[in-house]
Length: 210
Image (cartoon, rainbow, N blue to C red; front, top):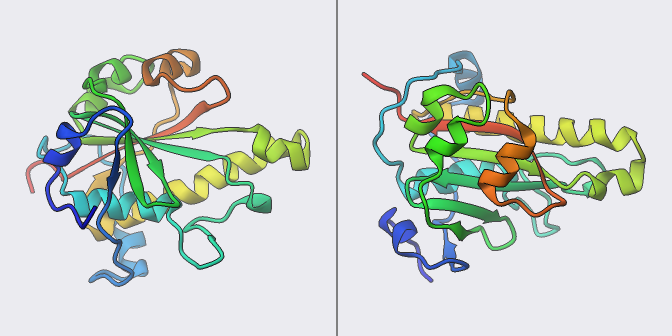
């Protein structure tokens, strides 16, 4: 599939279909320093859909492949890469595939309101045009490092999540960090495989009123 320019492709996609994303840019108009200085946690979003190129850039910043050796945009202890990254939007639930830089459609329903009910996420998760879910397969890391690997998984997710916040700022988007939710209920809403645990939630969108 060639470069896709419209988000309508997400709604048209069939379950299990792989959707190629636009190639990510590696140069932008905002410096890292400015993005750090401007970043704030914002909980009010314009409901307008994001462009597919913006979604592509956010996903790549979190877990995208950045070298021929398949290193990723965020470090991972022992290159275990325990993160499984998902995106929720009005068109359903999608799983990010770093190797192909593509999305796979997992669910067709708009589950944003159900997602918002799974803890202290409140209405802004239902309002945000997209929400990124960082799930983890802890065994990928603990098999190498034992119990200390749990800490390393949390560090891995923190690295990737901060990339998303800073990349969003550089794109003129806003985001906030969420960790207060019922893990088991969240996993059920997302229909996660049993080995995957939800750890971190980031709603992202255009700022309201700007």
